[in-house]
Amino acid sequence: MRVTNQMVTSGSLRNMQKSMQRVDKLNNQVTTGKKISAPSEDPVVAIRALKLRTTVDQLDQYKNKNIQDALSWLDTTQTSVQNVYDRLQDVYYYCEQGAQDTFQTKDRHTIVEELQELKDAIYREGGMTYAGRYLFSGYKTETNLIFQDAESKKGLSYKITENISPDNIVNKDVVLNEVDASKVDAFILGAGDPSGIAYDSPVSESVYKLRLSYDDLDKAQSDISIEVKDADGNVLGVLNPKVKQVADSATYYKVEASDGINYIPETGELIFDQTTYDTIKNAANISVTYNKSNFAVGDLRPEMYFDCEQTRQMPDGTEKKTTFTMDEGGQPIQYEVNFSQYITVNAQGKDFILHDMGNKIDDLARAVQDVIDIEETVDKLKGLLELPQYKNDDASVKQINKMLEDADVELAMKRKNMQSLFGNNMTNFQNFMEQVSAVQAKVGTTYSKLELIETRVTEQLANFKELKSSNEDVETEEAAIEMYQSELVYESALATTSSVIKKTLLDYI
Image 1 (cartoon, rainbow, N blue to C red):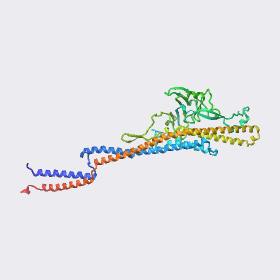
Image 2 (spheres, rainbow, N blue to C red):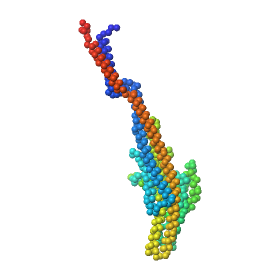
Image 3 (cartoon, one colour):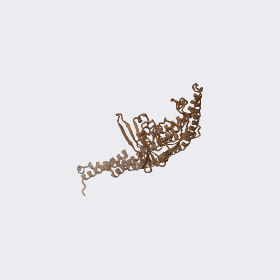
Image 4 (cartoon, helix red, strand yellow):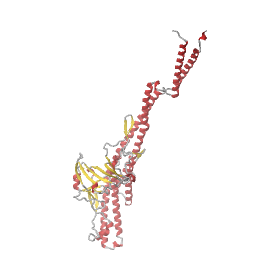
């Protein structure tokens, strides 16, 4: 084969170019630390790099964002749930004292205030937030579980449907014909005088009571309806309670046979006579629909607990109605914390912040207040005996002394009722604490599980980062050595090529 100068020159230049490309490639690897700068250099490395980078990004999202956010949410939830438990435990301690009636007379006002503060503290936990989201409102993370201020309840009224088991009907001892020192002059005159009234001694009576979740309800007869249902939800009968006013203390707990049920809007109580109670006590469910348009700051929002219809008065005078239906499956908020692995981070307020907690605390406070009131009545009656217009009048002294005797009897009855109520509620608040403990256990278990997932994800992230580096990155030392060797080859090629190319035909003449 004949080799010409042109062939030698072309071959030398081509080989020199390859050496130069090799030096350039290795120089890029050393300066960038990456095996390739473009997918065309090595498609296999490029494809694997895309997959590994995507996996690393996802794992980094799980570890440093999703899991951390979930842990913070759960940690805040644990704190609030524990606070609810602690407040219930405080109420339980009061129940222990009240069951023994160890309260001092001078301390009773303080006890009423502290019980109210404990109730408020429990409900305030329902308004706890994390990162601007309400913790216990299910999917409605922008809505507080409670009415947090006057603006939040402005213009709102609700038609609430509450399903209640007949097992919630309790037997309650009440005092009728309470001694009223303000009416002493009318009692002295007696029923025979146009300005007088007949005096009746206080009596104790046992009634069947069902407490609705709210008090201060709307008072019209049309504002309440009651349906008795069987286990299949079929309506067995419709009851029509008679509206009574709480001011009518002598009769509002006394149910006429023709009425069957007294509805007391102020306290949210339904009082059953014996016949009605015997009729419904074996039913599966009692469905009570009632209206409430006057809410207090701190009240639980009805849409978080019941099927209800909300009516909002708009600024232009129109009404906007919204229907809320309870989701029986709950409203879990889930975070993706690993590939196709989700974890529920929220607890719903309806599972551990209950209307019944506040209602029973109100009952306890009311029982203490009843004792305070009758003790003040006793003091007031004793003071009346010292006034000239009474102490010098035999009829007045006789009437006041009779009222004092009855007030002492009433005081004994109310102290007994208070003691019994506190004793019975020891079990109730133990049950409340067990419900809260169940939520605590669930949140704690979720937190521990999430910590294990975090450890696993951390390990996965480290492994995939190592695989990603192995696929993309070069060993700098090896690349530098290879580049040095390539530079030597390139320089040698330059020297050799230069000696070949400079020769012409004249060099051989």
